[in-house]
Length: 413
Image (tube, rainbow, N blue to C red):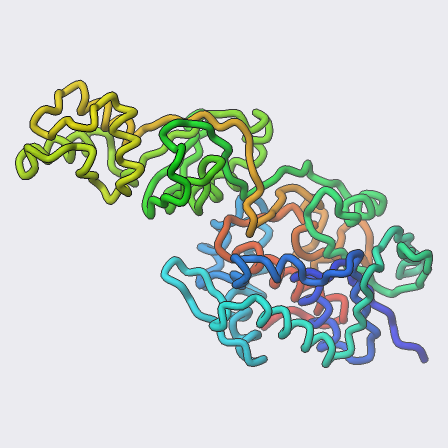
């Protein structure tokens, strides 16, 4: 009797993890992993600046789901089945040690994404997963009483028992059109985790300057995030900006990425507190030039820009600072407004919100509620997390649950 054929489309993080889980749970199945390109695990290789932010050290599902602008409710149960603690244990059991950084992000101790790639490839090969490169899935027709007839880019047609779509979240993903033809609704796509394009003299000529604790907000949309902000050649980036873009992905798309962002370079200090800090400088530093005496850990080069923007001359001392100038400088520090004129994809994080409608999927098995035998994992779903390893964790979780389900076993750990 021939082995049942299980096909997983998409050799990214979710697809690889699903294939491994399936092959490990059912050694009698023939597990085939399809990849339309010649580059499996491409996103894993470049993520985290080539270090691969595998997951995040957040082990309480109720806290973990708060990092997902879309998918938090559905992921609650899924994270009780497979969460970061399980991911860490899985990799460590296969010889890959992970380390936790101060902000909770977790990386391989080698600081090399190749460590994660090699581990996944080695495990898939050990379990007999068949990897087919340059083999995209172009059609899937349900068979009776079960299974699918699938077509590949090379013209081949196969009869398969189960099909899992893990084709990613980009607009070019074939998974969306296939899912739609099989009865699914695709939520509108919008970029998430992007940086802001801003042309402003306060940011000019100081790319690379970073403020470790600042607040970015879009008052018109009631969006606010606190964390590191990085000044770039094209505007603003850093974790606070990326998180803000994730939570506001659809709203910011709706205004064509033209809006006002307000920056508090002093973190969470209120304007009156900033005024107080400025006035307090008169006592200990009356003769010092304001332009040479930054407050609130603001980097010197940025501080000079803010002082100039407040209309204060380079030679003005603290003792000569007027009440009006104090107010103007406090405003520049705590509530500076910048006009955003577009976005740029962050080089390490390219995530899209939107995808297969979540209520059409059973998150206990990741199986379609409208097309039996069809499963989903990863960013093809309308799930996305903020930066910090959360998107990979969603891939590992949905991949593991889907892989075990298509193998015919449960998902409890």
